[in-house]
Length: 82
Image 1 (spheres, rainbow, N blue to C red):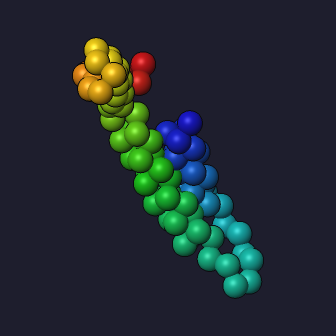
Image 2 (cartoon, rainbow, N blue to C red):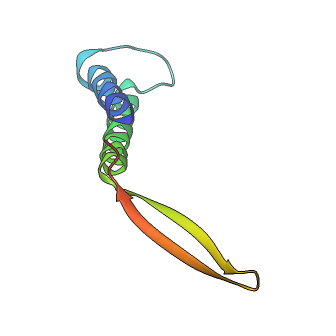
């Protein structure tokens, strides 16, 4: 979702920066367009990083052989986000 949001922000920013000539007193549409384009690139990159990172899961099993002592087995697995 963040990749699509980044693309949409970039496109809206490009339209404001290069496609429209709006005269609103006190508002610079070129600056807002460039700002939206920069934010769109940042959101896109963050989305890619979150998409490609791996998740890890930890499973712990406790086996009690003796009431006073116990064995702990820990198994780590890497889980792909897909």
